[in-house]
Amino acid sequence: MHGKTPTPGPDRSTDRATARSAVAVSVAALITAAALFGALAPKAAALEGPLINNISIALQ
Image (tube, rainbow, N blue to C red):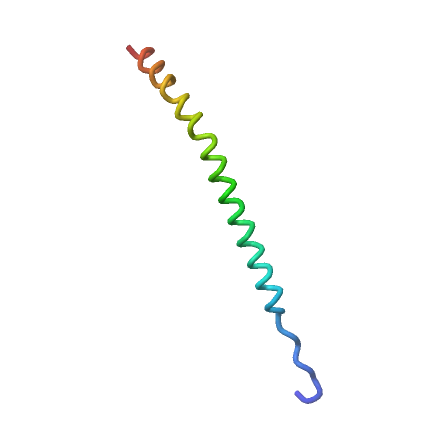
């Protein structure tokens, strides 16, 4: 096909920037989830003991 210019392919620099942005958001989400879990886990453990004791007393 003479006279036709090839169509440009996808811009790889944009693809890389998008991928890096997605990775950064994912890492931030994991860090946030870990921080929330770390903050809430002691409270859940503190509630678990009395809850289990109350259930065992109720079953007797």
